[in-house]
Each structure stands twice: as structure tokens, then as C-alpha cells.
Amino acid sequence: MTSEKKAENASIQGYESHCNCDHCGRPLKIGIQLSGYGVIGADCLNAAIVPNRNTWRAGKPTADWLRTLAKLKQRDSAEQLARMGYHPSHFVLEVYAQKLVA
Image (cartoon, rainbow, N blue to C red; front, side):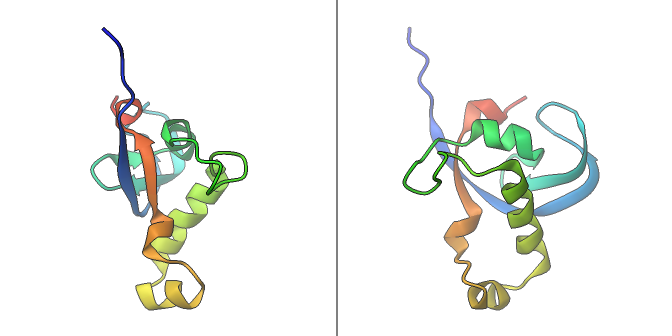
């Protein structure tokens, strides 16, 4: 029996401050709200992202950049994000779903 890694899309919805990671339980200053996965720490999310060297030079975004995306998504409206050059696809990540389930 082989263990296949199944990738799914997860959308960043915003952030939550001073919370716990729903994946590992670690206390967080900033937790990233993901559609369908709850509040996840940036390091846990980064570990679950499917590497893509066409989008990210290092294969994955940094944890700091993931926190920045979450802050932008929550703070700014869609019009403001568009003026800054952010498309809704900037907030959708391809992740290995089994790595996000605790």
C-alpha cells in the first residue's frame, strides 16, 4: 500500500492574534485563518505547502510572508488589494491536506 500525498487548495481568510495553532497546539502571536482548516501557525502551514519553484524562488513562501498575506487579506478590501497588485489567487495556496490535520 502506497501513501499518496493529495494536494488541495486552501484560501487565506485573515488572521487571529494571540491564539493556539489548530494543528500542533502551539501558542501563536499571529495565527493564519485558512478555509476549512481553522487557525494554523505560519510554520505549520509552510511545512504543508506543495513546493512550486515556478511561483516561489525557494519553492515555498517564507512564514513571514504568509503572515503578511493574512494581515493584508483581513485589513484591506478587495478593491484596495487590487490597487496594490494583489489578485485573489495570491491568497490561495496548494497544500498537502493530511499535513494540516492534527
